[in-house]
Image (cartoon, rainbow, N blue to C red; front, side, top):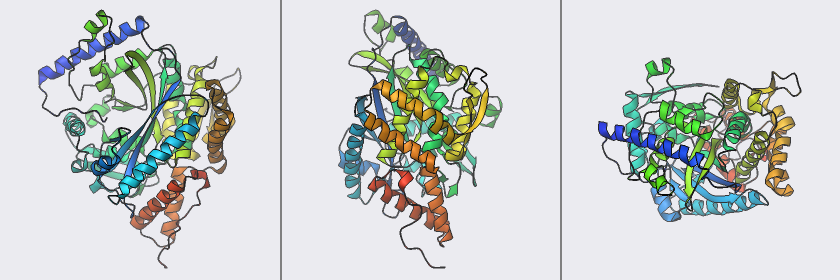
Length: 505
């Protein structure tokens, strides 16, 4: 989302030309796949984390331009709103002590960013949704000063043709409207990338879809929005509704939303790119000068710029990515289901669980997606977002009889998925010490039935019981969260409650 794109008006011919270029790009992708031009396996993974800026009072700070200027590193970029940043970690080869190396890099980068943010009275908060955000914070005037964001907002608003409706019913209900896509900026996520060959892509994507619910159940960290306690992971419904280009009539007709889990298992990466073209009109019809088919005819590797740009405006929870590195094309699965935080250790525990279990599931002789309807995976994802660590999921039974059984998410993770994750990390060549440390964090969350969302909710309610107002309790919870985040112990070890004094009744 951080690419520089110049704003400007579009006319009818721009959209037709862009559609033609998209078809050329898809043909180019087909040729690259048929000619087996893609990079060979390198076991490469990548990591991006979206961050919030908040003051010592726990309230959001609209200062990403000033903070980025002080950080002065290409590893940090803008995100949608002025209280957002994103840190990108260079690709690493999965294996050895990779997670410990990543932990050191992340802690160093985040500590440096936090010091620079402090120069303008702000600090880094790594969390799914900042609990202190209010509706007035999420307005178009607080979009980052980047042409791409203003242009994207303009095009989504124009496509919808009316205000966005935010209606989320969880522990409490939130019902309001928004005039822009800025509420999307409340959603701060972790994106896990895995480079795969075209042959392995469908199995890895299917496995990632199947396990998305378990990821969210153990990793949920976004229970609050606009002062309301909603789902344990409120990012998915918020993201869907704040980017929804469909007025109610198109929703009733079954038109697909741009934030999308999907609707079927796949047998090739091409299917996903093809769906994106067939189902979703262009939002940013900006054409590159490259003719991808001419480049292919000349023996070169096309950028497929229009395909890449369009792909970035369809918000799949597991997104296909086409990219070119050192003149060689490759494919990645981008896993987008996880919230940021709570700590570096928690982020890397979530990553270790994902990379391990996806490897194991993708290599099973009877893959889980041959034993479970896609609709069940989608329903599981919804249940995990609603209920977090307390979710109940449908999962294929073991043995020859098959069928589905309902199971606690923690039982599924602890009894079936963690052993698979261990085997998967062994297959990647991850050191046993790294494997055991980070998977042990997931196991402890399951044993204690706690994650970032449950800690936030419990601490907030203790604040209310001690006499704080709702706004005071949310701010105090955010301050305590940031304090414990900086100490770095994983969230299952965090004491519930506020350390700071509260007024006597």
